[in-house]
Image 1 (cartoon, rainbow, N blue to C red):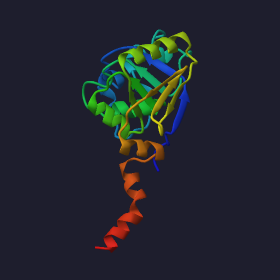
Image 2: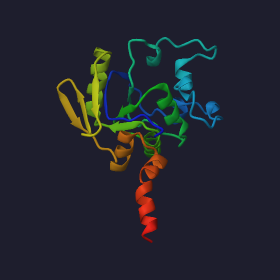
Image 3: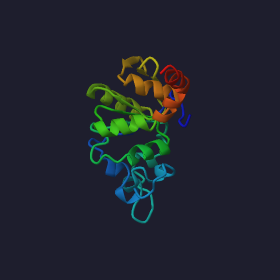
Amino acid sequence: MSNKKINIIDSSAVPIPIENIDTDQIIPARFLKATSKLNFGENLFRDWRFKSNNKIYNDFILNNPLFNGNILLAGANFGCGSSREHAAWAIKDYGFDVVISSFFADIFKMNALNNNILPIQVNDELLKYLFDEVFKNPKIKIKIDLPEQILIINDKSIKFDVDNYKKMCLINGYDDIDYLISKKDLIKDFIKDQ
């Protein structure tokens, strides 16, 4: 298996309450020359994290040590723009396993799932509540129970949707090839019976 299994995550979150974050903001085009997924996290939100002289922007949330965890809390329409899979690579390599937003661009959502990231779509009211709670207490934990498809914070327990096949892949740490390999005995039996 090539991916970390995602089952239950109990983590603090990094809030970026900006709408319409496109894939060029997530990972600028000048970093797309590599074909390996390694080290893309270094340049996640590069132009928002660093000045042209490589000094950090102190007011950008990823540069604030109060906020950390493997849940990214993002504004609506996250991952819009071009279809670059590198955006998911950068998010995963930085250390995020979950992205929560009120809306995801379709291609980004599929790229996230294909790269072992769970995108959770919530309504606008819940997203605002999550931002309020995380900004009020940066250490607050959000629990994600993938098998039960439940997000829990404080006394709120919210069901979320996820494709059944992708859910199974995330829980088992499979990519599509790993899934096929997990079925090799069944495939051999099928071929033998033909």
